Length: 288
Image (tube, rainbow, N blue to C red; front, side, top):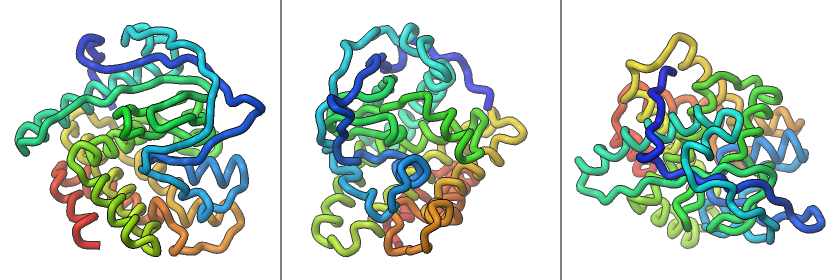
C-alpha cells in the first residue's frame, strides 16, 4: 500500500523505550490487543478461552519497570524502530481518513497516540508485555506497539507484507473509534449486565474493529497495490479463534471465541474494504 510520508507535526507519537517486569511477572490481559489469543496459543500454549480476562476494561494490572521515554519527537520516535516509519505513515493516514468522518457525524475527534516500546511498558491501563501483542488503551487513548511483533506475525503465522502490518494498526485504531463514539462503553456495560454473553459481545467488538480497519483501506483504495488484499485476508484468517484453537491442538469451541472465527474476521474486513462505509460496521454490533 503506497502511503504518503507522515508529517511529524500532525501525528501523536511517543517512544516509550524498553522496560521489564520485576522477577519476570506479568499482569492481566486487556485493552483490545489484536493478537492476545495468537500469542497465548502459539507462544505460551494457553487455552484461548482463558485469555479473555479484562479485554477493553482499561485495566491490565501488574507492575513494570520502565525507562524514561527516549523521545517525544515523532520523527525521532518513528525512525528508532523497525517498521516505525511505516507505522507512522499508517497512523497519519488513519487520522486523515477518520477525522472528516467524525466531522460529518458531528462527533468530536481526538487523535490517538502511537506508543512504541520494547519488552514491556506502563500504559494508562497498567503494565503490559510485548507478548500480548499490539493493544489499545482507552484510558490514555493510546495504541501500543512493540514492532518486533511483526516478525513473529510473519514467522509464526505466515502473515507478512505491509498491508498485514497496516491491518494490525488499523484494527487497534478501530478500538479508538469505538472509544470516541461510546460504542466501547456500551459493550462493556452490556458485558457487565450479561456476563454469560461476555465472550459473544467481545467478538462483536473485535469484528467491528476489523470492519473499521477495512473502511480505512476502502477509503484509500487508490493507494492499494496488487497483493495487498490477499495479505489482509491471510492475516485476518490466521488470527481467527477457530484457526488458533486448531493450531493449539484444541477442539474448536465457539462459546470460547473472543475475536471471531477466521471466516467472520475476513468477512468483517471485507465489508469495510468493499463499502468504505463505517455505518455498515455499526450493523455488526446492532444486529447480532
